[in-house]
Image (cartoon, rainbow over all chains, first blue to last red; front, side, top):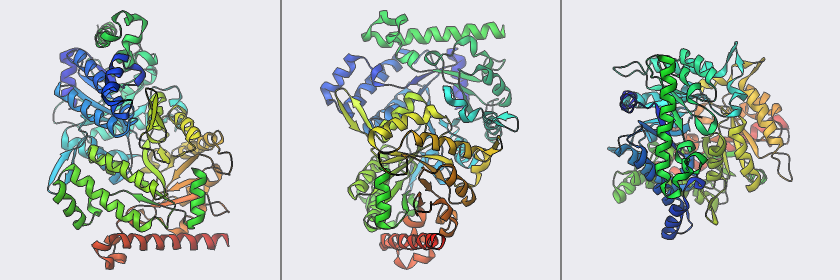
Length: 312
Length: 312
């Protein structure tokens, strides 16, 4: 799947992932009204609104991008109906040949991590049969519990040729509270990054330079991105925090390798709620998906021109 | 909810939580056969088997214990039907007046953590109405992302008078990989514990000595438990790792305060799969729930006698 992701990045010329994090305040009123008219102001109604909203965006941008990253919390908050729409969104994006990164930040120990790995990436055994659960292509994983928590994912990644992105240095303001603390002269996130590199060495596809084990390093910390790019040469870096959180294309070139690969930059509200921004307000609510498309094109150009400047 | 937990611990005289982590290999064959006969060897069939199994255990032990801790991974692995049974289990345990600790180990940033907090502990807004999602009483939270990831939970805890248990020192063998690394002369988990204490200071109920912010410290690390008990005087400690993972009552007394409170010890497979252990094999598969009841009574006595010895 890492090789599919790379092939799609090359084909679209867009190292971009769109975060499908549908907060209700992003969903156009007319979509909510239609959903509530059908299902009432219920969890089912909210889930239906999210689904229609997502589908509009995916249809509008799927030819431009290699991947999407649905944030499961935004679905989980609507209970079972929300999780059904998460699954529906994953399936729909896969039908559109998009690579799906489930932003689930799971992580536990032993058999519990195994259950998460199986449930999100692999197949679960039921009697003599086996079934995919949520069936994403990649998931994000929290490393706080150590190798016990990550290795069950590696096993499933090898079996399914899928992948994970391990949280190394997250994009939020307080990420430094623990992640930046110095241990033997190096910040914690660098120690985590070294483990990511080691886990990745055990988990290489038959062909290609990138392992099944990627890392998350926030766009808001370009200096750390530069260092981590070197610490984890075989890890693809998922870079959240572009746009709404403040990251810009010019800040992000050091997350990439000299071949122009090695990173994929996420934008969520900057794309999916583009119509609410001054710059794209002209599209109006009804054309929210066109506004998203315009925002993807602008992001693509921003990153491409920054990469061109650096690697020219 | 922390005060309800404490009242129930006093009433049952059992600082014990039963982990409802229903792996398929624990579910008696006759239950699986009945479920598969009705739903086939499908995700629905697996979920039904888990539900019947859980219900048997809950019915058999609910008068003896204050709380249960369903591990969501074990349900999530069966996709949507599994998550429906998670919800059904939470609701059923609440009907039985048990405190429900959702072992979800969620943690993200800002609005995403808010969505998890709302989805698991609080109410989500849908138009002019609001609904509980999964509606546990407590959840476990991963601290790797720092205060940004935890504070949205605190907000909901205050509104709903519910609580969280933050991962401090987990029970698994590799927990030391990052958690034990020294920062300014103290292990990372101790720094996390200090934050747990600070978060808890902001989040006290109107009455009582314990905050809404608890901590997870593994039974397998009693020495660390002793230290963390002092670092976080107002935090209830959730102690996993008893039984199957090797923890014993005598090792655990330092997790408690002198009032005999301050900790709640979890056992999962030691209770729910008791019938598969030599000691309880006499019950046979059909009486698996009675075996679980016997195992709860033995655990209760083990911990009570250890506490009595220490605090006599």
